[in-house]
Each structure stands twice: as C-alpha cells, then as structure tokens.
Length: 339
Image (cartoon, rainbow, N blue to C red; front, side):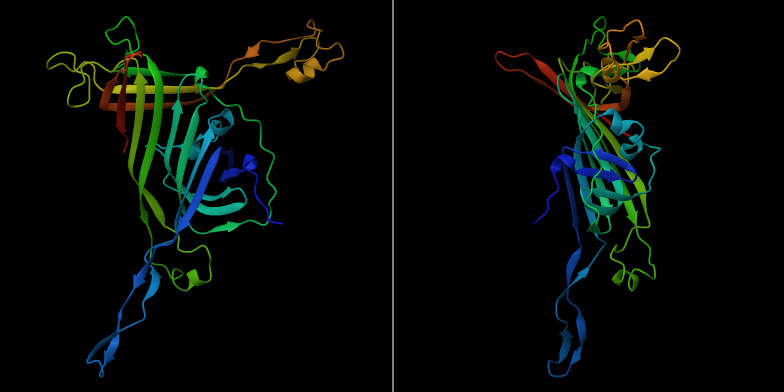
C-alpha cells in the first residue's frame, strides 16, 4: 500500500532546529541546455559536420524551499539564527535539512517575512535556496511535535518613530495609529564555484552534484508596509519628513515590531520546606483537589518576549483610501538598505 506523510506531522528541519509549518514547498531543477557542436570535416558534404543534439548542464543543481508557519516562542528562542537577515549574518550554508521524509543539502536563506494585525495569529514565511540533490530517508519515523504556543497580535505591538519622536503620540502633530504591519527582509548572494578535480569525474560517482564554494552576501533590504489611520505628513522627495523649509527635523522613519507569547502561565511554588515548582495540572491533581492554597501559591508568569524586528529607512510610497460608509485610512512603505 502506498505511503503518505500526514501533513499535520510535516516536519521541517534546518540544521539541528525543527519547525512545524502550516504549508511547505520544496523544488529542484537542473540547468540542462541544448548542445550542438561542429564535429569535424566531411569531404562529401564539403564542410563541417554537426554532432547529434544533446542536453548538457550549464550550471549546478539548484532548488528552493519555502514554508509558512506561526510565530511561536519555540521558533525564536533560541533558534532565531536560522531566520537572521542582517549586516552581521553569516554567508555560510545550513549543511543539511529535511522536509517530511526527504533530506536536502546546503540551504541559504533568501527572505523572511511576517504579518501582524489585531485578532490574528502572526503568520510568517521563509524562503531558502537549496544546492545539491534531494533524497528520501529510510527512517520514516517523525518525532512527536512539541506544544507550540503561537504569538497573537494582541500580545504584539508596533512603534513608528522619526529621529526618536513617537509618531503615535496624540499630543504631537502626527497621532498615527498602526492597524496592520507587513515585514519583509531579503538577501541576494553571489554564488561562487571553483574548478575542482571532482567536478567532472567525481560528479559521476557522487549523487550530490557540484556544490558552491561560497555564497558572498551582496544586497540586504528590509521593507515594512504599514496600514494606519492616516499617512505621514510632510514627506519630501527624499523620502524623509521635512516640516519646514530647509529643516532636517525629523529624518528617517523607523518601524519597530515586538512579538510576545499569547498567554500567561501559572507557576505554583510549594511554601513549606521546599521551593519546588509544579505545573498547574499537578497542582489540580493534589489530594485536596487543589484546595490547599495555604501550601501552594505563585503569581502568573508574564508572556515571554519572542522577538523584535526593526526597519529604519526612507518612505518609498504612501496612499490614502476611502469608501462610502467606511473610514479614511492610509498606508505607507518604509525601506531600509542594510547592505
């Protein structure tokens, strides 16, 4: 009987880190091109002959991995490095990965994005370049998925500032209220290959194919699209705020997005002769049904701070929208050139 992997248990591994995605896609393609060459001289034809057309590789085997997931504490503490796109990021590859029961080699992140808005889960997506072959592993057993605590926008907040001035301050002339934010960070690489002895004879014996020598970081951009109750006043042709002629107050617009866990956790402590901590279920399973409050007590632990993302740059576009029976709303885009 044919086997299928239950998508509810579709595991994605990057290095030694695990993520359970809501959707995922892994693809790979060759760079085969038609090859036709002159193949000597024929007296009968009084000219050169042409070899039989063939398909030959013009580049390495390359693929892509993309997946969507819900941002949670388990995905960012302590594994934020696999989503890191910054000036200090590594230009190396994640050596091995897995999607379901298939393995792949050499992953390099190309983009990371997420959207946050009230009453919605913070959904994120990531894309990676894949170099090398893909193969099915013999062991089909997948580990039990851990409990995932999603972060909701009710436990996240955003700030919009310009040169340290809070544009959301109602006492100022801006009074901007963020309704939705879309964050995207992307990186381009220069992929380098070397002429090695194993690229021709070795590649015929090694199924992994030709792999890149290094991937130098080329361009890193961060973009943040914000929907709000209004647009930003006094944006000039340079994409900065200019409130008076010739003035420099303020300059670049900065958007800071902070994500927290979605719930609080009760932590009960034994008061008598020990500081042993037990969870809520163990507390309720006590012989007295959890009524012994004189023995156990403890405050709620606040939701953990998961991650912060910032975009400080120039306003590239903004627009106002209005419709009958609705509210006037605005939107603007901020772009930061990191590298």
